Length: 387
Image (cartoon, rainbow, N blue to C red; front, side, top):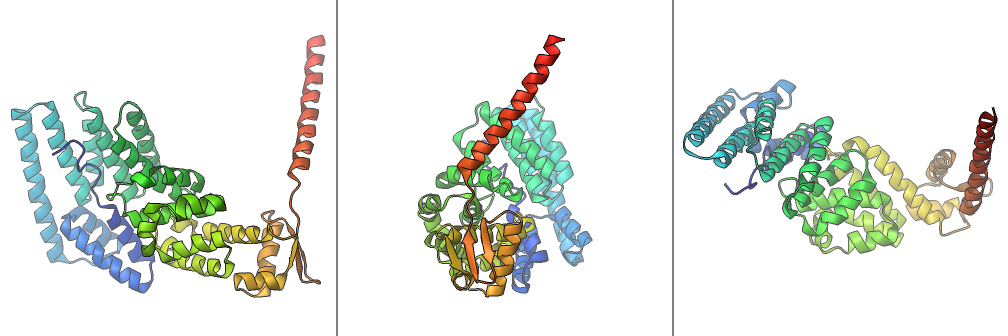
């Protein structure tokens, strides 16, 4: 086995996504996801994972399949145990560590996550474990955390991976870490950080074990859409060769980006609805933020249109977005009240007037306020010193 060749590849993360889609997708998505989930379980002899899904009610038990999986996984684990013993008797420390890592990877593969964590940690603490082996073990533990979605463990292993990479990790491992952290930041609603990481590693993305390039572009592009300036979206995302290569597989994301850049707001709203159905509602990383995301993107669309005018009619604005005047009126009223849009609605006149904040005046007032606080503190301090 070449150093670090397979350590981060088990368990297969797409299986966790199939499980999520089987529970949260549309009827067609659920059917397809369930089929792929069972196929993956059979392929990787995932006896423990299959038992867990049966206990959770995700799958109905097939006793013949249970017996088949248990027999296959037990046999392969016994073979790996034998190789570990042989390595101890006949080989050096490097080979011993590699055979033990193979065993830990298989435990992760079949769904014995607690045993896999223990095995990984034991090897990690050995003085004979090389830096690259330590990094690959951390990636293995990180992968388990992402597969079963354990946030504290994920953050802990990301921090640990950064420490090891800074000690001398190679380019491949550095890039893999950026890709993993990009998706993790998306799942934590840290879209600015995720967009920066996405742009950094997009041109050198080589982590199919994390997700396909199309799925990675989907998550990264959606993060960019909500935080990146409009001009940069065109330059860094829409026109990026890697995005162009796969954008056909995620048409609603493509429509969303182009409609935002080209100010085609009716198409923008239609694409946003498609993104919510096809991606946000079935992505295990973005599902919890789907309402937040669609709200922020609506605000972004409204703000972008309002920036171009001193005033415009409610009717023209409704027509631009392809919605009713009542819908626009309620939406704007809600976002204006929350301080998210700077405009005034004249319902009688049927007009929306922009009310851009005076940033220079706000900075001046803030300086005066801070200056008053500083003078008060100086006066109090001088009084104390005089005493």
